[in-house]
Image 1: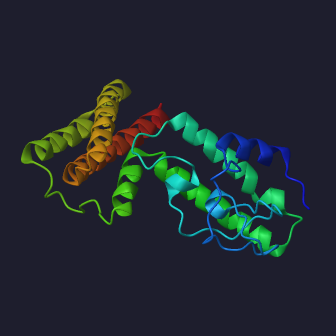
Image 2 (image 1 turned 90 degrees about the horizontal axis):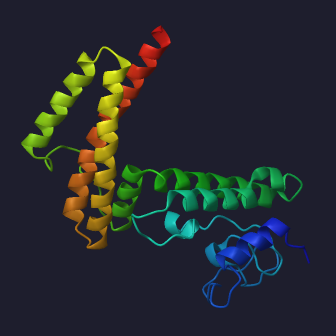
Length: 226
């Protein structure tokens, strides 16, 4: 039987993948190699023969990265889990294996990358959590009040009129504070499942991120001219 690499043993031991009760039940698909129903959590690795399985398309990003479905995500822990998983499935590790495992490696690696990029950004994470409940963020500004829209117009004008990096950095610092506050608001709203407030806050966050993007581009231009 194929030996388990030390990195694999360490990760699964830490994450509890081989602990009692962490295996899927009788509905678990059989391993494509040994045909046994002994796949680990996420159906990623066969606990019997250690072969890398086909991508489990039904798993959500939180399950994949072994996080509870919550808006409050610890960034450092998320990055650590991402690197651990990528270390297990990276295509370089499967260059001398079967074509099936090589393809599975590429598929898992792509899915893990997508999951990490989504969960590591508050806006994308919030949108994804809405999707898990069959909801979507509004594509228009009907959820916004006029005062907020007027404020955004004024912010855009301030960015456009800013002639030096110091002013732009001050504007960006203010936006960073507001984005942090919005992230806290989103966490609280998801906790009580106030999806209307979630949607409104996500739309506001999208506006602020757009202004922040404009600031960063203008800063780059100013730095390039110096």
